[in-house]
Image (cartoon, rainbow, N blue to C red; front, top):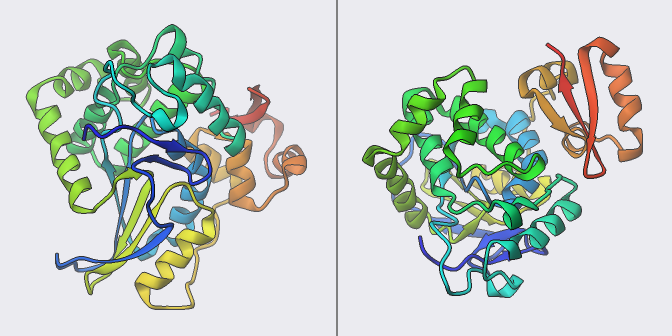
Length: 307
């Protein structure tokens, strides 16, 4: 997993460029039901950008598939050569401008200045922590860690390759952060991560995010890059060979905020089809004043549950 990173704003891909938007693929491994593989990385800016679409897709269509989150290994370490020459990225400081551009384009806030002052040296430490949490607990807890790590990195400018930052994030999940970080640094952490890297290769995922859906006939679709919601719905229809899907009712905003703890305006807009200009009135209609707090970062509102 040492390929040069390529992050393209137009296609929403971090990784190998030139992938098709929705590509029909065929697998020979037998599966008992539809599996969705989300190949990602904790420091993938375009993965952060598609959180609104991915959340709604999983909330409304997740009953059709088993979700598997796979670590892809975006950055092992910095080196003397170019990392992403297409975006002018040769050293950590070059990432800051690219990240800000992705944040402004997607409206999922990205500060990025830490890549100048205190850069992330590798995406492997948080990836290993993800795998240890997944092993010790379950996919849902690991996915929650991934979300908190991305919030810390992109919006709140914390270095998630730092052990103390990772420990604090894990502790806030009610887990033993020090013990988990220590185990992630043992050989088992890299072994688990290497298994994900092998799966990533077998799935043919060269860029992040990549979403792959496979049906019982071992056929499926591969969707590369950050895409609008309808791409994922259309891909699922292809896998199911069905023109009609029955989405679940969207959760109430009160329940969603209680579950997610923190949501940015764009995430709420996508989930509930709300215009940006109407977001405050929507919140005021859905929640009592003592149920939430509203804050602003980098020109975007975000909302947190108060209990």
